[in-house]
Length: 434
Ligand code: ATP
Image (cartoon, rainbow, N blue to C red; front, top):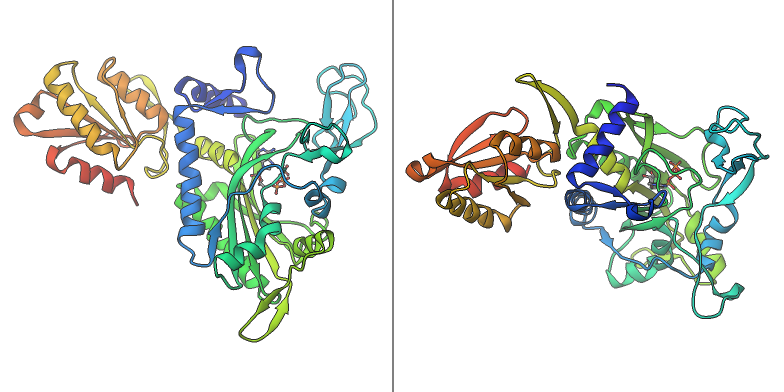
């Protein structure tokens, strides 16, 4: 299977099975925007919950927050986004298409071979107007990252949560960037979700914490079931580093279209807090009451994209294999990541079987995401579940009426085993939680 073919297959499976659709499709679509369907939204929720669990719940020195998307415009002046958050872009003089200069390998338009303009800076922030007056004072921006609200509120959060440094604030939320060339499906879009941690430390301890978070994050990708050989840590070259960053690494994944960034982990020094101190006039220093030390904390940031991780999970899990002269398409998600954990399937549409199957599905619902399906042959139903990556299918058949047991079919091996109905819920719940 070549690269384009694999991506096409993933995109079409996503639409067919309810993972992801083009936004506003009935009106011709909205470029760079995507809607997540029933299984896609479950998968996305799992990513966010598993991140939150690892970062917030399992660390007693990390707390969460959930900030507004529209913030005071001075935030984006202090952060440098108003002045610097831009890509160099070129326009085709003939067909008027716009491209990122660093994405082109020739000086002609890739579509119509027309002549291109000189590169010009293009700010990626979406501007909006707040309130009834459309004047300069009402200009605001949709946030291009979630991090800045954390910096602006760090002292408030620190005080109300009674934390001490080192401590972190985590946030998951939408970000918006007017990308010039959204592409590779949900990899680069204009509206997307980020999961960011800003971890505040005493200067001098920054390198130790930086190493801690790099290791912790790579372990999380392994825990998500992503193949370790398709993941790598790429340190930034000195020339790539933002002027304020002491160091930065990207966690990259080998997508069908090449190695690409999933997450950035940066030692941002005291740049952000110092900037907000200067622009807001509010003191950002932290005072350690035990030894009377006062300092502006340094920050280690981990910044990951939910949508990119979702695409990674799809690309990593997607497999086709020959089974009985047929091709089986299967998403081999780790069970705790899969959008649906258990599908319950009565072998025939007979009331005695349906009743048992429905009762079992209801009993499971409180613990795991389930699906009930009685339409079509059992082979077709298994294939449908394979295509959304459901790790366990349970069938209720006539034998169930005699032996009070059901058949559990494992997605990857397609092996089947008989489990007593009394044990089925406990057994399945155990299987999906590592
Ligand atoms: P790129 O170089 O790919 O544009 P970036 O270095 O600008 O990314 P960051 O600003 O570090 O990205 O954002 C952190 C994370 O947010 C990225 O690693 C990525 O997972 C996600 N992200 C950034 N831009 C987009 C986008 N346009 N669409 C989807 N996810 C994005």
